[in-house]
Image 1 (cartoon, rainbow, N blue to C red):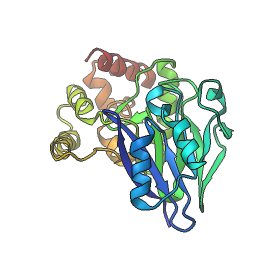
Image 2: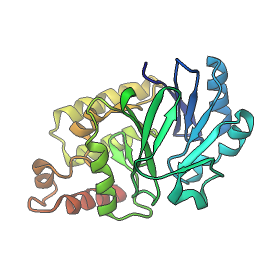
Image 3: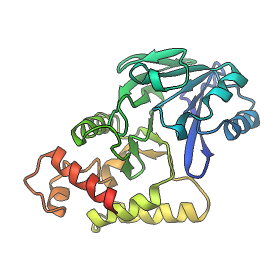
Length: 255
């Protein structure tokens, strides 16, 4: 059976995720902005955290790790390349390494760009990828440490996953991202429809995360920087994919 995924709102606009293996009872927590809401979500379901998976070192993704690990005894898993600035790790991994949650095996993907050493956790049998602040709903993370080429390479890895893959990203930014995306492709019917659905979801108090990779490929301007119609829309018809991505990211930074 696939992992059961629960989205847990934290802080003002963060998300953590529970990934529960029904067969064994193993439960991973992906990123821990704060411990209390995650502990509440676990208690409500009668689950106990067995693993904590960390995507990157920013405080709004790790501030609750120590408390949650102390309360549950969960094994803390993160990137070997980022270990020097993460909470203490029980397992340090690199791209391609396996991570097992109960009966389900995932793989580490290096998605550096937002930060160097940022990783994603892909569980193909459950059709889910936990992307932190790399690929986001209608967006991607600001480039604090990596170059446009680094981030484009990371996004290209994620874009190559199965279209039905659920993308579990770390923030509720979809409305702002949709407003920006419409400045790039105002005539994209899928984007217009998605923007309307996002507004309705947020008005009802519902999260917009996770999304599907298929949705992102059809509407996310950062994943679509390699498309001729997007390059034309930004006035760079002959640009490389990286140059087009860099321009879109720069526009978002000014938006």
